[in-house]
Length: 137
Image (cartoon, rainbow, N blue to C red):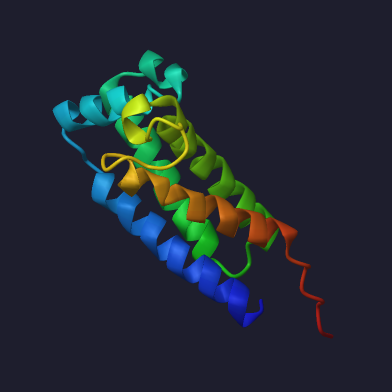
């Protein structure tokens, strides 16, 4: 793994892993609030119970963060996992009118925190597009 990919994977992996660990054991009321917000972008999550959603979200983040940090997981696999997660977050951003200004693209004050997920999408694309490392004998 080259240094630039290691930096991309290390920083984003640690961030996502920490976020997932912080959500483990989330109280039902908090999970219901996060689930309601997530459903603005991914309506299918409404079908889950809040506790199931909380486990799904936290385990997904822990798994994606760990995949990014594990050097034996290819850049393409790790990038695809993070890209899928980022796509869900960006769906919430773009489908929630309160997150963007009137043009539907630039973040509103409320959307600034979620708009950072564009960086995760860009990092994902960079990892997927990177050339595989040649194995040395």
